[in-house]
Image (tube, rainbow, N blue to C red; front, side):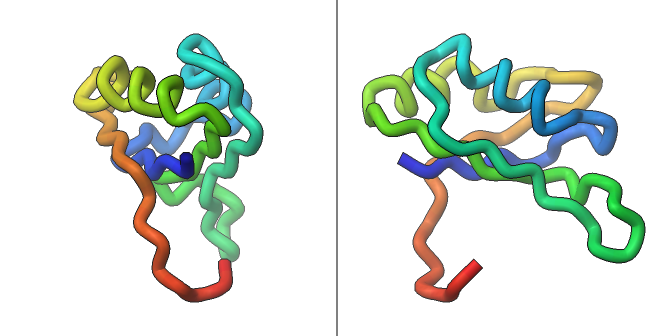
Length: 84
């Protein structure tokens, strides 16, 4: 299941994001969205967890949690139908 993580602190790294979700199960992919001009975080990212139960557990555990001073939002990513 692909998860969308929003409202991340701009200082949160991809490695930190992966570690946060690996506490709840296997993470097959982790992508922090970066600003092309500055190279800095845009404050959101995606995590792919192959086991739906792990993903659901991660959503329940991490949604609305304060991480690095920001209250993150975690939900199932919607398929936009557009290539990324």
